[in-house]
Image (cartoon, rainbow, N blue to C red; front, side, top):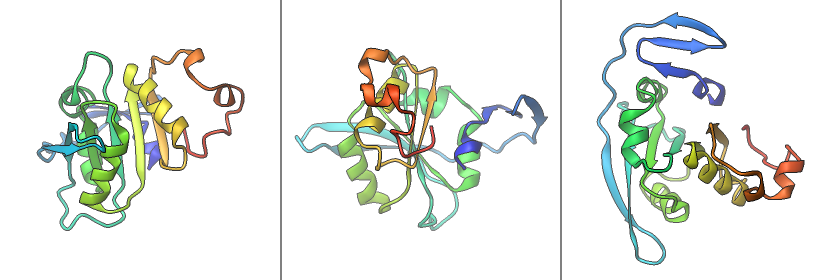
Length: 173
């Protein structure tokens, strides 16, 4: 499924491996829900979540966490960018999460409390890609995959172990 996430989903066209394939007009995605949780310091944080329509949610349904770029908020990943992605994730039975900020520890704890232990995939664009990369480097065994879209990461902000050894992350990137 990670490879499939790399598909550029834009409206009724899918661009896969350089070829355009027309698809049926997708059904509107399921509604998103705003969730607030408290981190370990008692500070409130917010994220948007889209659950798949299928009920009950399959116990093996993975979670994709998308981190927005600088100047954006959770709506960027949920409503603005990648309009076809939400429909694809719904069709695959995935849970899609767009947090407002970079507080990952409490977010993961809240997701486990709501959905149980599941495979987590981390994605981000621009500054959100840099944030996702730093999080994946800090906790490589926590995530099953990492998707970076034009990450605004400076080489001096990434540990030398990552820069010099592509096998550092035990996950697909």
